[in-house]
Structures are given as structure tokens and as C-alpha cells.
Length: 120
Image (cartoon, rainbow, N blue to C red; front, top):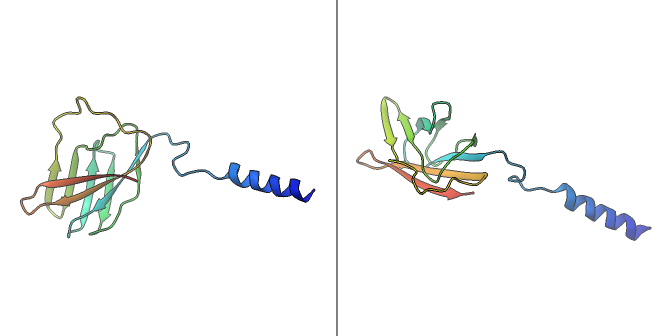
């Protein structure tokens, strides 16, 4: 009887455990600020997808996207300044699978947005 109870307990633990990326309905993207200034807002793709107040070397929360790629249109606001990363197109690109990803962003001395894509 003790063996059955132990087997039942082990089976319950394994069945009850799941990864955070099980049963996802979309692509989850967060921002890592790899610069030395605070990003007031970071727009990724559409107008509704805004990450806010990301300090240097900090992460935003994840936002869920229906479709995303390893790069995207990005508009960073720092004070009164805007910095834009503008892809030309996504021809030949494969959409990301549902999961968790990070766009590491920095701004060069010339004002160019630098994107570092990471699979979480």
C-alpha cells in the first residue's frame, strides 16, 4: 500500500508540473534596456504595444503579441527625443514560435537603435 501511495504521489507531482511556455497563445516579448539612460516608452510594432519606464540594465514586463519576428519596428522615447529602429520588410523571415523572448535595446552615440535578440 505504501508503494502505491508513493507511486501516486510521484505521478501527481510530474503531471501537475508544467513549464511557463506550455499552453501559450502568443509570442511574449520583453525589453531589456542595455543603455545608460531610462527609456520612458518603447513601442514595439503597433501603437498598443508600449513598454514603459525601463531603467538602465532593467527589464520590462512581457507583452503578448499574435505574431512577431526576431526584429520589429521600435520607437524609443527618452525625454523629448525619439529613436527609431525601422525594418525595411519581413520578406523571407519566419515568425517566432509561441514563447518568451527579449529585445535587448541600446542607443549608440550616433543615435542608432541597436537590437540584441534573445530567446528566453
